[in-house]
Image (cartoon, rainbow, N blue to C red; front, top):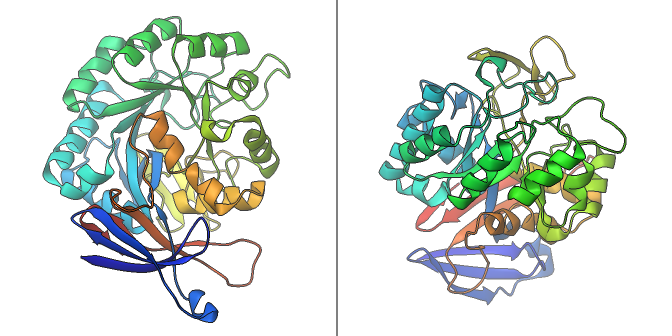
Length: 387
């Protein structure tokens, strides 16, 4: 039996939570003086991130990825409050993506914690725009047209773990590919694209249901009317993910996105880089060379404008979104818990009796300064407890 004492994230009430055999056995009020409440951590349903590329120098896309590497990164994520995730493999050769998927599948088989946390895999590319700007930091030599037979080979190699794929819909083969992939049970997202509005709308009609990190992976200048943004923001069938780390999307755009999308059609992701958690300096993987800056940004090496993934993790993104957009913590939290689960057709985690235990405990830094800081305390994931 595990016992936790904390304040609920949704109403601030102090509770004692008892967990047994991987489920919440009871949630009881905790009677204590008001001053003592401030010393309790917060507790909330466990964070779920759809797009995590690696951490501390380890990339899921690496041709040298090992099962131990996967377990190391997954434990890092748990210690930062993440309880479910989609490890993400970016544009690469067939063999490199196959290796990453096979290694993730072996880790999933070997490790009970990996099985609890990894809800599937996300392949971001290689079927993206070859244009500079929309392509982002993805390597041009591996960008290619959508190929459903290639995707099905990856799905077989992964043991069925591929749940999400990001592509650019302007490829002539895209809509046929989208229909086939969705029929097979894979969620299709649009991203790293230079498509116009009609192409985006056509892809949504074909079954695409998510916009990957809207506001990024696009041209620096776009037509004011017929562009990549409006159909994604206006279509209530379509969910948008956004990187709310304070760098990838300016506050003004983040607020506009939050006002355009219904609350069940917006997802927060960190898109954390494989160089997240690394000290400032220059790093490389394959043909990609980046600088980790003193302020936490990760940029294409040699300049400070073009980002190459995030250095923040999911909890920080939730807090930034909440502060920037004026949303409550409870409402913002759903965008990194309930909404991604619903998008993938997975059970939504709740903080209620008899629910599966998947809990994130955290504190908010109250040091002087304009922003709260997410400080993970521990997670409970089934029978696992990590701090």
